[in-house]
Image 1 (cartoon, chains in turn red, yellow):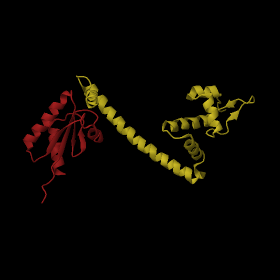
Image 2 (cartoon, one colour; image 1 turned 90 degrees about the vertical axis):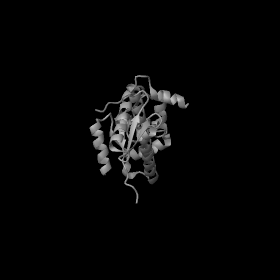
Image 3 (cartoon, rainbow over the protein chains, first blue to last red; image 1 turned 180 degrees about the horizontal axis):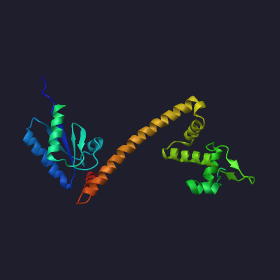
Image 4 (tube, each protein chain N blue to C red; image 1 turned 135 degrees about the vertical axis):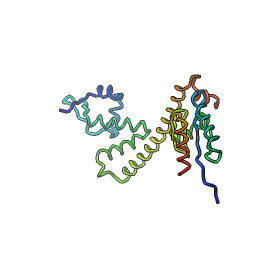
Length: 91
Length: 133
């Protein structure tokens, strides 16, 4: 039997973006809190993956997508991000 | 009464030379251009509308022959020939595809501009592009 799919979180960042580091740290911190099986995440450098960023509708950094859907277009609060990830986990 | 324009006025309005306007008439892109009693060409709103259509179509790299067919479709869509309807359909598909490309390009440039504006250390995207070269 396959393990249930977990949400995939992508944080879109760019060089020279001051708030991006804080967003990455926020996601990493939530990952530690909720456990490694709660969601997967990766940091996406928009310079290196411009096509991916544009395809998802990213217009500025930091932005956060969950399961290929752009959910936050600026840094969210810890609580809002936690709720969005948990909701994605339920879907 | 509809305003009428001399060939030089149309040139100024649309950026077309008198020679170009005469040529368009000769090859059938403009039809039934009116003349003054002194036999000077007089252009009306219908001609201006056609000319603007021609200019837009040229920006899409349509040939003059294609534009002439599209103009006939524009003039009388219900009675156009089958080939002209097919051409119109093909051109519509080209435009849709072009629009998609333009939308993607606009989105990319929007992101790049926002990244530059949001950076304290110059423009990371431009630097990234330079490194790729």
